[in-house]
Length: 158
Image 1 (tube, rainbow, N blue to C red):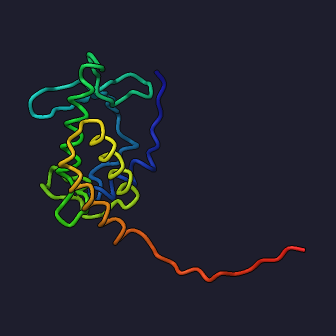
Image 2: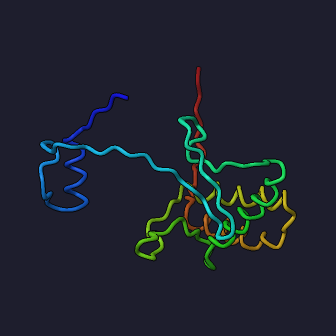
C-alpha cells in the first residue's frame, strides 16, 4: 500500500493542538501507521462498527435488521427526547474528556431532529413524547426563524 504524508499540514495541526513541537517530524526516521476499529455500546450491549471501505464504514452492524429495528427506533426516540432541555433546545453533544456539554448550538440540525422525533413517535406510538417535541418546535420557531413583513409590490411586464 502506497502512502504519503503532508508534513506541512501535520506540523500545522500539531503546533495548533500541542503548542511547540518537541521534534521535527519530517526528519523522523520512522512513521508508524495503524488502523483502528470502532464499537458502539448502549451500556448493555456492544455492536461492532463496520470497518469496510464502503458507505457503511463506521455504521453499527446489525445481525437481524428487521428484528432489531423496533428496539433501535425506541432507543433513538428515548435518546432524542432526553436531549431536549426544558426550554426546548437540544443538547447536541459532549466533550467526554472534559465532562462538558458542547456550547455551540447547531441550528441547522434543530428542525430535522424535531422531524425525526415526530416520525419515530408516529412509528412507536409513544405519544407522551409529543410534549417534548412540541417544546423543541416552539423554541425553534421562537429563536431560529425570522418573520419579515413584505410589502405588496406590483410588477408589470409589457
